[in-house]
Length: 448
Ligand code: P61
Image 1 (spheres, protein in one colour):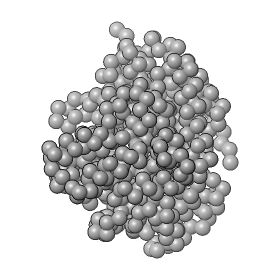
Image 2: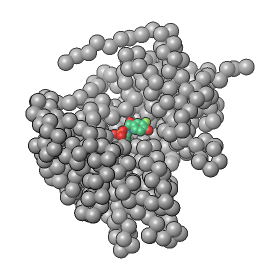
Image 3: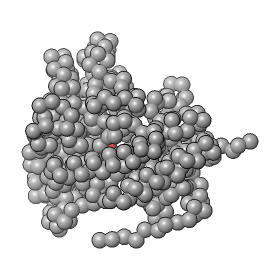
Image 4: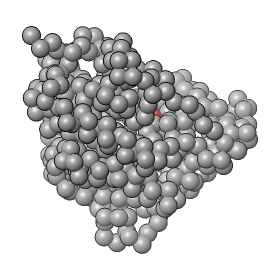
């Protein structure tokens, strides 16, 4: 199937971004030329997946597609019990409400927007225990998603194991640049936590891509398959939540998987309040089928390699022109380092948001801010949280674009790079309370 795309004039794009409050989330997709906003739900489904869509068993209860999906997740991820959800944040909501109480602390390898919000809404406080290198865009550490065991241990000693419902691990780490966590690290976290009775839960959203990096970079794993690495990694955790819209190559879907039977029962009961019956979780039977097939396809070596290599191709092109990006290039996106791109724009004037808006105006390429707008405000002081990383994400959907598209994107970024000195920052003029970056509006700061 093909879809016509529009190439608009610069003037038309100026009007569109102004109408969108300089926020790429508020653009109409019709007004976008190459869409690198996200790899979430934007992947192309295969012929097998589309064929599977015709096999939907849309029974309210006990759909055969659910049992196939359950078996597939048990097979590939290795967990005992499975609950489907409409997408990742549905699963985050349920696991957070099931395990977190007021006054709890949840250590994790860097925050993710929706994950942290659900943990906070359940009464917990997220604590970042990722290694320091993750906050440095120039560090070449091969596993920048690793947990600092020292930071984790310090937190446990300070607040007590009984106040830590689980360690929240993500593979790969989205906000750090799609950076992986090593097998050695998850094992060590497990060893530290197990005797203290602290559970380890995994955000498995891009764990297939993480497994590829383990295969490539970690000793003893080069001759293991993605499938074997994925299953071994998950075996060191007690459960996982998943946004299947990424690794699993579907447009919608998610799940929660849990080994402990009591926690599973609690979560399975909650899913009927917020998502739907526990055998469909807000999804149609056909979606469950496409997801099961997507999981099988997602672990194929050639698929993962070509996917990660395409991301690197774009990163390497940008680097040859001296454009600052997060190193090493991660699994699903190239992250422009907006602080270095616009050293004259202070972080309070949203350099990464500015870069996303300017890139769109210049070329019609849509990207996403991952900096101060995404980080939100400190609840107590009301001030912006200023993250060390101020990034603009060029996210590559799976099986959608060609290398030629990557060339166009690189040239588009180069064009903004060449005029970077003349570009001014933004001020925020509207922001909602939760996850403000999705709906906030900005205006250009005038020169006078
Ligand atoms: C993305 F700007 N990611 O990267 P849901 N965990 C992880 C994710 O990457 C993730 C979810 C959980 C998106 C969509 C998105 O601040 C944002 O299926 C590691 O989207 O509910 C989603 O899964 C949540 C974009 C989400 C954002 C939050 O583009």
